[in-house]
Image 1: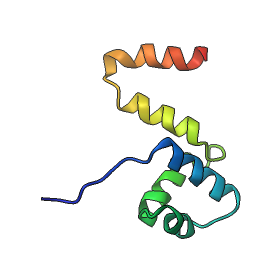
Image 2 (image 1 turned 90 degrees about the vertical axis):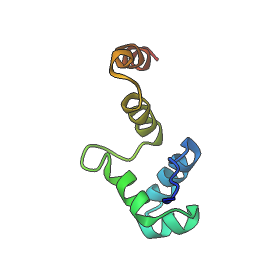
Image 3 (image 1 turned 120 degrees about the vertical axis):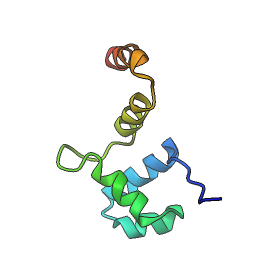
Length: 82
């Protein structure tokens, strides 16, 4: 069997956000969380150039991308109204 992968939790995303704001490198963050530095690097790059890293915003994006297309409109409308 292949390697098992698990998605980052919201808690881990908040930790990444906090450590990134303290100028920790992706490698340092990965050591703190026990995750691959590639995982952390990809996570930090998702919003690079657009704005500061936001755990909550990335979690919403991941929720939308994991939702079937026919249900995405409802989910996006719910997020905008909150």
